[in-house]
Amino acid sequence: MVKAAIVILAGTESHADTGRLVNGLEAAKEFEENEGDEVELIFDGAGTEWIPELEDEDSDYHGLYQSVRDEAAVCDFCAGAFGVDDAVNDAGVVRLDDHDGHPSIRSLVDDDYEIITF
Image 1 (cartoon, helix red, strand yellow):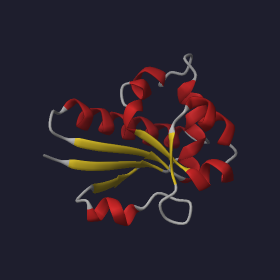
Image 2 (spheres, helix red, strand yellow):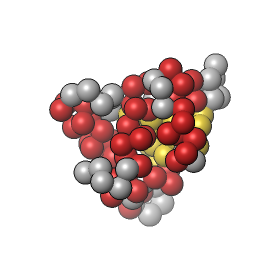
Image 3 (cartoon, one colour):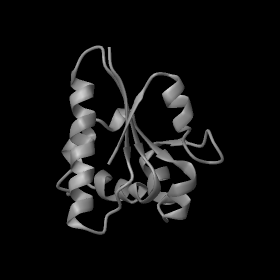
């Protein structure tokens, strides 16, 4: 069994950022499809800006996102800092605030997750 935490930090501003998002979603999907693996998909920092776009059915990446959406969570602090609080609330995506309003990376490491950032 493999345990992986995919952390999307890339924002929405560039083609390179989009590439990192798609690679992160594809990686999460690969773990999700492998029976016995555990995956956490965390949108953190500027990565929280993707939630409104990914929730939009017209988005090029909506289907890919939907394939791993059940594993998705968002940094509570960063959702506010990057102005996507309402979109995250409307989407009902889980918010993480374990460490000073942010996800606890240490807890994931302690639980034997490999941390992979995009």
